[in-house]
Amino acid sequence: MTGRVFAVASGKGGVGKTTTAVNLAAVMAEADRSVVLVDYDLGMSNVGAVLDVEPAEATLHDVLAGDADTLDAVAEAPGEFDAMVGGTHIEDFGRADPSKLREVAEDLRAEYDVTIVDTGGGLSHDTTVPLGLADDVLLVSTPQVAALENTKKTLELAERVGGDVTGLILTRVGGSAVDVDEAVERIDAPLLGTIPEDGAVADSEEAGEPLVVYAPENPAAQSYRELGYELLGESPPVSFRDGEAEGEVSAGAAFAEVAGDEEEPERRSLLSRLTGGRLG
Image 1 (cartoon, rainbow, N blue to C red):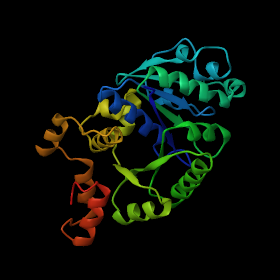
Image 2 (cartoon, rainbow, N blue to C red):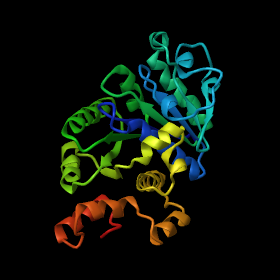
Image 3 (cartoon, rainbow, N blue to C red):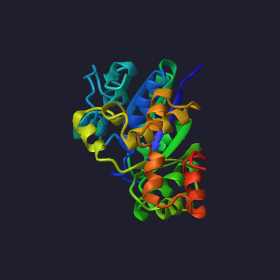
Image 4 (cartoon, rainbow, N blue to C red):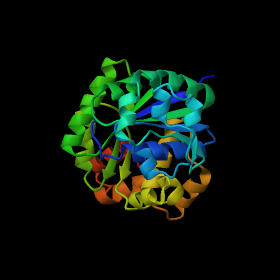
């Protein structure tokens, strides 16, 4: 059986796309899947900047240039998964052939249960290729209007190239239930999950670790864990659910708190939709 490919995409940078890709990789590895994360932002490789990846024999750019085999560019990353990072020199961008990503993806499907592709921001040929080959396209955006408008364009691009858009992930959700509701209407895609604003995200990136490894019980980490297991069709480990019951604040509870009185029928209905019925 071949592995499953997820493409994590956004219409612009700075919305948490790479952070989402990194943490989903760690969560799915925690769920006992063999996972590889591919940094496919050929112009601005970011995974190596936020994740302390062991050096490999080659980079993704070397593979796309035909100078190395796919598995030569695979290295170990913190979080029990593997990663393929790109080169950091401007010359690397010029010699990489984006069309070869399809071959890379097929090589990785044969080796791993899950391949997560961190796509480039914006609309370009580099972005189009992974959108068309992935089994699941995950759109990432903040609730801001400009970010949502760009994400809508990414949705339209994915549909044009035959990509299967699974849904929308909203990051840096900090307090307005109305913003989230409007975001879902603007994008017209299923809401997969919301990730609350969490200062530990920057700390984890400074440490070179996924948030779910660095601070596993933080609200954003809990949200990423719930999302990752849901994408796999499973439930998070009992230990985390028990921790939540004993006083740990889950993402859903944190969101309910900032949204106001959850007993108010209209708000309660919205919160129930956003959390898959867990607050209903």
